Length: 160
Image (cartoon, rainbow, N blue to C red; front, top):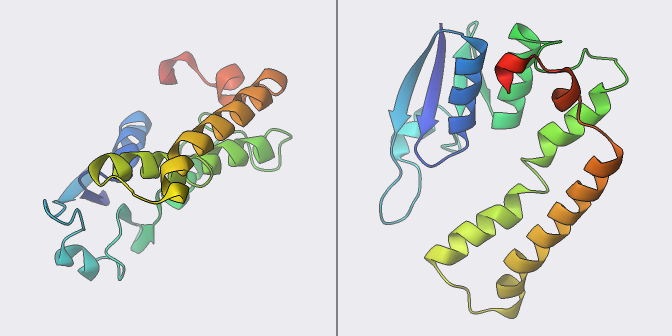
């Protein structure tokens, strides 16, 4: 059985969604952020040296980072269903969109979230959350107009 170390208000929620979609049995070990600092608890450092989540325990191994966990679980349990086959023509675009969420898209979205909690007083940080999301959504929309996403054209209806 897969064990998921889940931190509230973190990216580990997407791993729960994926495990449900894959219909894989799993156990959740929950951790709560500190209400004042929003940091992960010290107990999570016993699982991951940086106190990060998500982390899964599977097949006697520990695996961190939501993008890596997602790729691993899909390749193990649903390659060809939730992803194109490795080496196929569509695989590079699939990887692009998979990691876009964790890289290019995530920083601007996190800045918007955090700045709502603690408003910035610097010109750079005040401009970043409004400029970056517009830019990456515009780029994404342009790319989607010319390149269909594998998932949208090949995924079984049950996953949509």
